[in-house]
Length: 260
Ligand code: FBP
Image 1 (spheres, rainbow, N blue to C red):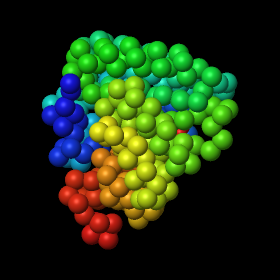
Image 2: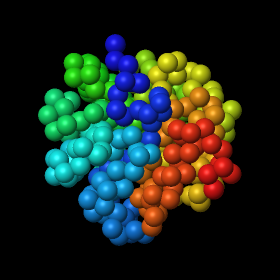
Image 3: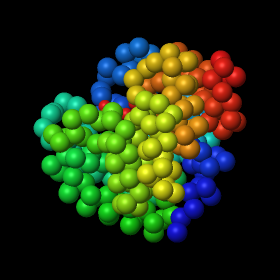
Image 4: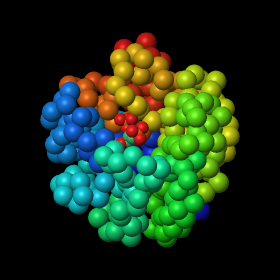
């Protein structure tokens, strides 16, 4: 059985994944505030910060940019993804195999699961293959656990987030990345239902330093193991500022006031 605490993508058991698949998932709009963030080179440089335990990208970005940074950045290859140019039933098709991710240097792999979608069955089957292949290569599997679809009326409800996270445990993920549930107590419910699998918070749209750090602090205080964050880092003019503060909260046990 894989011990994720031995993996380079954790530091003292916790994670800070810098997510940078937004060019696929959201398109140019996410890069408008800080135009240089459209350049993967810029984000690879940001990911060299000590606080970042892995950079999550799609395979095209990994193939082109990672070789130059392989000594300084841990690579998490996202194996599926979808654009928002179409809208039907939530489904995130696989575009890369575990084998190919390993070949290009992945330290971990990621998969978005839309539990609740009418296409959940297909995604469960794809995830099964990903999870079993990843075990052969000793690569941790991170599930982007996003409940979505007609039966999911409110994806911010604690029960719904906890259910999505629990599905990660049931299907063999090493880490589930879930939306912040709104409070430390609510995050505790999510973590409690997730057994020994690690739970990390998803960043979401950009917030003030204090508001964002407070959500992260709640998550860690609830027993969560850190976060996976994109926009709250690369949409800042000085990403190293927020990364330094996150380092304090996620890895050094500091409070929000202690880092601000
Ligand atoms: P953010 O921290 O910017 O929210 O990024 C996390 C993430 O999961 C990305 O990996 C992904 O591109 C995006 O959120 C998807 O968000 P959504 O499906 O809610 O639009």
